Image 1: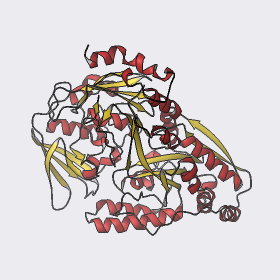
Image 2: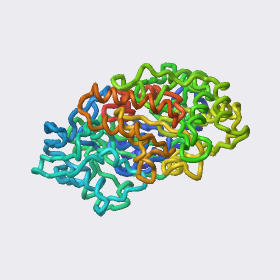
Image 3: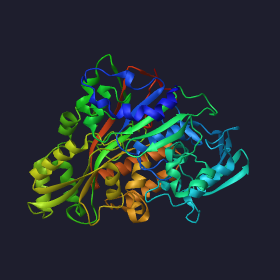
Length: 526
């Protein structure tokens, strides 16, 4: 029986029962067949439509099904060719012309060409497009600078921008820029996210809700064929259960290993892989209403929370204390002069008294059970709750599953909560502040500024940085922004994390990327 047939007929029963293996001291590798890689994911995907999702958890599946015009070069955040073989940029930085790869087919047998590129961007950006409505939180912000997409010929496409936009090429390599089959979208409509078709090294096989998403090697792939026959993505939301499954052999690859569990995999049966990247774990503060509408109270929260203790005791040294809104992985734009807010509960109490905050003031705090880049969110949330209570607040935690959590936080905290956990892994120093700190990015405008922070000076700096093609100038603008934002404290800046994954000894060639994406075409499952 072929591995792929075995996957469809019997893998679910074997994989789902693997945690019942009596001994957890070594993996039962024979429980998953050769050529089939079983990945333990942190949550069920929301959709398999690139235009509909925002979470890295979902992107880890999508980048194996789809491709964009560009792709990050291995081990870097520099862009290189993918579905576009080459490109030219006009002198004024507003017109990009892409030469497309010849002979590429979507998984449904239709050709990838310039018309398909135009369809993808029109669908994302034009509200009157018949397939525009992909869900409440699409990342169309990444391409809001596009004025029009024009077909020059079958293999040439021109994209005109409204103004120079420095992160444009980098955003094309991000999963929001992945190309979907127009024919498949037209055939499935709103259900396309359950019946995806791209051009990638794997094609969609099936999705069993709350059990697994299965993708298979694409035999018609234009590039080097995938090194394994199939990948099964299993949603295992509880971190301890993921660890048990990994130890028992029910999964071959686990992403985002809890820091407290890393030592269990330091033996010959497993390989631990790490990779630094641009990550920020922070608390969104509701700056529109309630106590955190006062800057002094937001600053007090930053002083009140012992971030070093969280990094040392909860995360066991797998992260560094964050100083501001820009991760230090963006070395060219990072302000090294910024120091993290020190742990100073007395300073916090003084600021709260100055702001007139009464002891026992209640705070509602949204915490997630787990999610993309969220590290160890429940213990972290509990530690934060204790520190804020110690300076006089009365913090009530409300805990949600990841996708439910996003559904509560992304539309904004107004009328619901005072603060919420959040983590971002980004591809450019522009991305996080532009999408989550500008006034124009408030939720009612379609952005991710869920705490309603507003500073016109920050807005101006971010707008200027986006339109500059001079990297030194951009860096200076971002450093100015970081100082202002750190002082305004719309967030509590907690941690910058080093991503990790663990594989069984049956898996070779896994490489983590600074983008936090999970490319599996070169991975071998023995």
